[in-house]
Length: 200
Image (cartoon, rainbow, N blue to C red; front, side):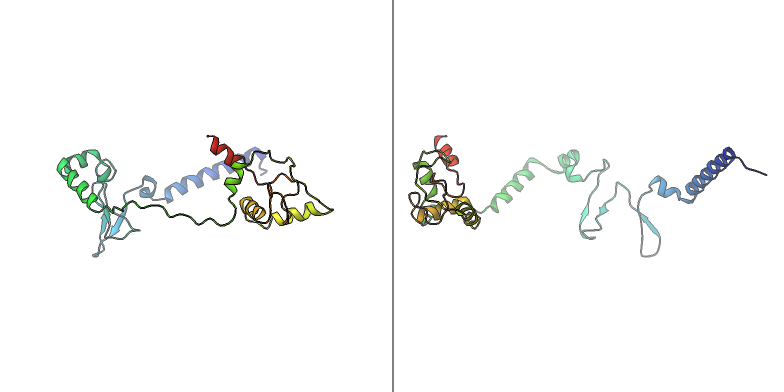
């Protein structure tokens, strides 16, 4: 007997429906319905935990327990439970106990930092020339711009580059080749944030 394509389609659908029904029957009802967790007692009988009983956290161990109220939250977060168990006097005692644990330090003067070398903040406030405008003469040769970029990359920050630049004769002289454009600012160091801080 020859089976048509339409009959094959109906046969495949019927087989899939049978498989779905068989799979549903194979899964236990307690898994589908989400029954409460059970634990085995020492004598082998199951022990079921309900929401009204104390739930033990398996990660923290059996010594730490969390009391669960009928609303499903911990008793420490339940307003009615806390209101019935705590009073104004108990709150006052708890506050006094916490205050007794406070550590009070005497106010002391801040230590004076030992500044060595030029102060880049003071230099930024003292100057007013714009960034990138040449005001100092620079005698450059071929390849100095590349060498200047290489030397600037060796500093961890532009502040450190500016400090080294000022400590070695800058801004009038540029021995380290950190200020090729002659604006008095080494390695793209920007004095504008310090100037704005003083104005504000």
